Amino acid sequence: MKFWLLGISLLGLTACTGVSFHSNLDPRNVVEYYKPSSVEVIENDTDLDNRAYKVLSHVNGMACQLNDRDYIATESDARTNARIKASDLGANAIRFGKCVRIENSPACKVSITCYGDALVVNE
Image (tube, rainbow, N blue to C red; front, side, top):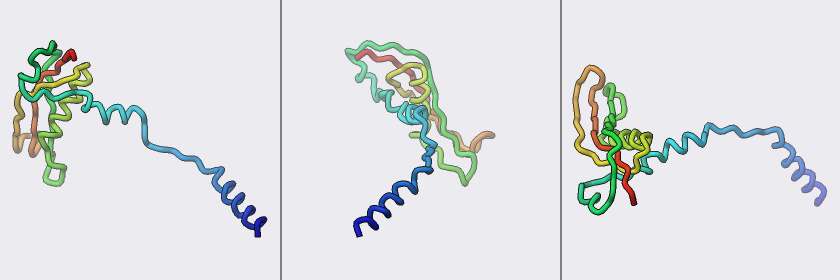
């Protein structure tokens, strides 16, 4: 009985030796996924009191719903897009001004664009 169990165990272990595992996960994709979290959202100007900061550039983010079957454009997606752009500029914070919603434009059924300033805030 022991030899039979040993034989089945060895067969099970060697049966998987030719199997390889390939994944579509790429370390660069992980960095891109977490990029918006590296940019702090400054809710109001009092958050910048007693903190040195520099405005790098104005940025905008956009979310677009092309037609009725597409994912709904949200302000959250537009703000996330702006945070990614701010991170690409080397910012660690963003201060949003306003978001604008436009319906039935030539490009999108619904588009939302959020505008803000990419900042480097010294801690």
